[in-house]
Amino acid sequence: MLSASKVAKFIGIAVIAISLFILNWYFIWTATFTGERLPYELLVLTENFVFVQYDLLVRIGIVIDRYTFADLEALSMFFMASTTYFLLNLRRGLRQSIIRTVGFSSLALMPLGVEVYFLDRGEFWIHVTNLQISLDILPWFSNGDLLIATVAGFLLSLLLSTKFSGRFKQREEKISEDLVLA
Image (cartoon, rainbow, N blue to C red):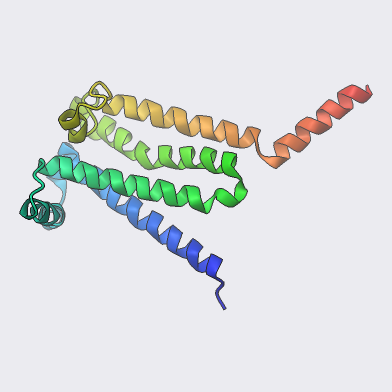
């Protein structure tokens, strides 16, 4: 019989997987180079998915740029996946959960920077989202900055998770005991 915690963990993992799939699909769709090479049916399917939801917003009186709406949707998928990952790791303690979530979030956003670098280098030092420009939030933050920040965030989380892991602490304590005894 499945326990409630196992069901909750399964649902959390499913939310993370679906969110990351949709997030990376948006990365592919919004990249100029890759988007032009998508099969036509997939390109139309993706645009219909985004624009049907956008049209519903327009009908209730919310008018924003379609690509800004796509950015909002991608960011909501990112935050949903990161929050779920954080909550699933809380049993390890708050510090470990935060460190692991930083690493996870960095890995989730890294494909965008890598994709733009290799496939659409002309936009590498241009803003990441249309949302940045429309709301004037960090307009200087580019795809290149995103790649650098995600690599640094992942490496930092890797270093800190090693530093604060139980095995590292035990080894550090044993070395300090040996030094005191010597």
